[in-house]
Image (cartoon, rainbow, N blue to C red):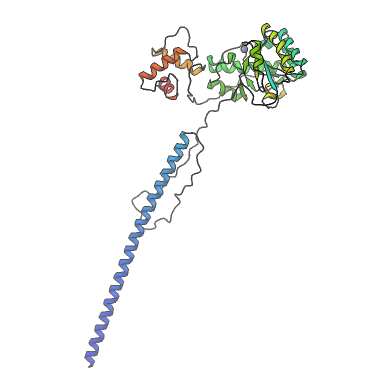
Length: 399
Ligand SMILES: [Zn+2]
């Protein structure tokens, strides 16, 4: 091989090597570009996935809010995945973080107590109004003869009559009886303005404090006639004042005959009586009879397993606290209910010509109100039930 040939061959080999290097570099570059493209596609997919998850979480949160169940502990998986460091994409990368807003607490109604769920032979005899001090004295004696206690629900202004305050004081401090609230003037509070309702409740408790000479923390409120136990305003104010429940009854001894009164004797029964002549006669027979059956007469607190009403040094007559604001919950009202919001509905139904009524709106959901609500529902494309559910109340009262 000549020198010339050798040179030519070497040159050819260098060219071949250069070509191979060029191909290699080109291939590698292509590979890198493909890899980068693939990575971008994958990252975009991941971002979209994260957004979808965040949206799903928001839906869950809204659902939880609407149905008032505690927000489930949803694991937010929208964690910042290795953020793409290359050129910012046009897509909004800010993943909406669902801030769970403070959900308003559902309104809590006080229990309306009809009976105690117990097995011991214990009953509570409650005596309302107390217009007749002498009769009350007789009833107290009947209870004491059986080593029993009573729960008294005086009308507040009656405590200002001579004799009753002294008797009630002795009942509490000498015999461990309980004194609860039954309004100041025997008013149906669901018919009153909110301030008047507040005064009726508050002034009774002040009259009790004055009669006893202590600040006496009552636990129960009894509605006049038992009417208005679904009135949200009343529950709101009683809760604000720290009451524990609305005291209803298992049987009204005032409206029952002796057979019915005796038939109702069972563990946990709450008897309603008044200090009338008729009820005093009934109690002369019933109290000894119940004791003979092995029943113990206890206070409402004792029947329900609650501590006695707290007592603190007397702080004098205080003004009624302003009723705290509340959000109407438009709970369903139906036949047989009494509530302030029913007065508002009746006023509006009359204004619109659906209800014909003499005098002032009663707040009682009777047959005429059922008919008027049904008519209103029919005319407004609502389900015709005759019951004022939330949708009906809102349409009627808020338009
Ligand atoms: Zn009464």
